Image 1 (cartoon, helix red, strand yellow):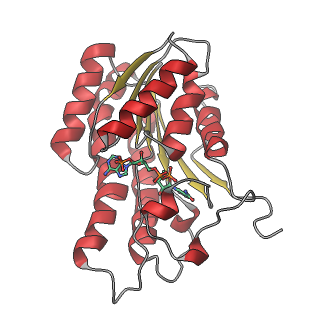
Image 2 (image 1 turned 30 degrees about the vertical axis):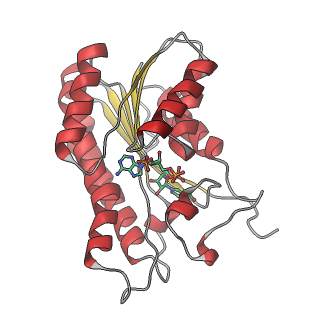
Length: 241
Ligand SMILES: NC(=O)c1ccc[n+]([C@@H]2O[C@H](COP(=O)([O-])OP(=O)(O)OC[C@H]3O[C@@H](n4cnc5c(N)ncnc54)[C@H](OP(=O)(O)O)[C@@H]3O)[C@@H](O)[C@H]2O)c1
């Protein structure tokens, strides 16, 4: 399969890439992120897992249309149409509404919402032509429940669910699947990079592991092409226990 995973230099994205890298069937796996060094390190880890796959690792900011189009064109030129796109890149800024700046608010929407729109739009023409494909977006349980300090993040994650529902209805007649995964707290660098409020983080062995979310992605992909998981919630079984 030809697979692209955005934001895959670490955390959930890298766990997803590793899940595919561990499989015995040959894949062409494309990963992007902004930081070149972290991307190179991730590429090394994937190659150590298996050398049977082809890897395409290149920096790309999902919020920038030209970078997204260049990444997808380069991948398609090398390997052909994308079979699976995982829109995973994302971050949050958690601040009370009177403290978050307009620029901060818009930067969250640019990555978590516009990035998904841009990447999906870039892979869709080839998927439509081949009449198959799976687009998976990592949203969040914050797409279903608002919380104090979450204006930008929750707005972006609620919105991306809407985007995915519309896309599904628009192209399901072309046999393309759309899947939205809504995880609860996952133990990654997310809360550090996002400067989250302490109450929002769940850094404990009770939190989900990135691999748990990766398993959901794999499940959605492995289902027979006529079955679309559409939307999946995953949360820690006992967050406070
Ligand atoms: N961790 C959680 O509790 C949790 C819960 C629910 C949903 N999620 C969602 O899961 C996704 C992954 O989060 P994570 O926990 O794995 O976070 P993470 O450990 O901080 O990893 C985020 C990844 O996205 C990349 N990235 C960030 N901004 C980007 C951009 N503009 N363009 C391209 N790549 C970008 C980062 O690399 P660079 O910084 O180098 O670009 C990194 O590879 C996000 O969409 C997040 O909202 C996380």
